[in-house]
Length: 95
Image (cartoon, rainbow, N blue to C red; front, side, top):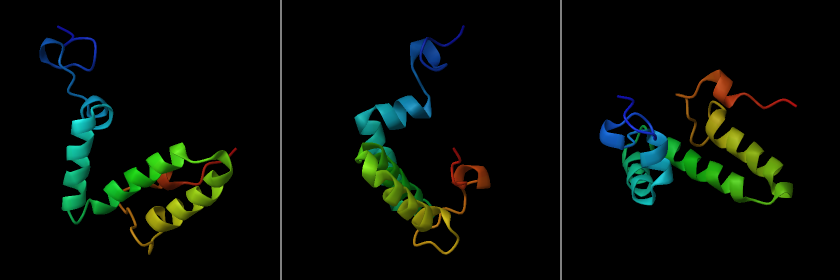
């Protein structure tokens, strides 16, 4: 069995992170609360919020906001440095 159309779950249930913690409002809320409650993961939750705000902001504001996110979350010594992210994930985009 392939587990259904949406992600390999039993009887068609989707068990993917994307479906349960991003696309489903209650799952998203519960996962964010979990991140906020864990000292080692709180910065990841804050980064998620900032990235969603970046997606919704005006085009002219994106560069400034992206720079602020990089310095806050990606730079060692940043206010909420996410040291668990790989160098590839935190690299400044080119092009």
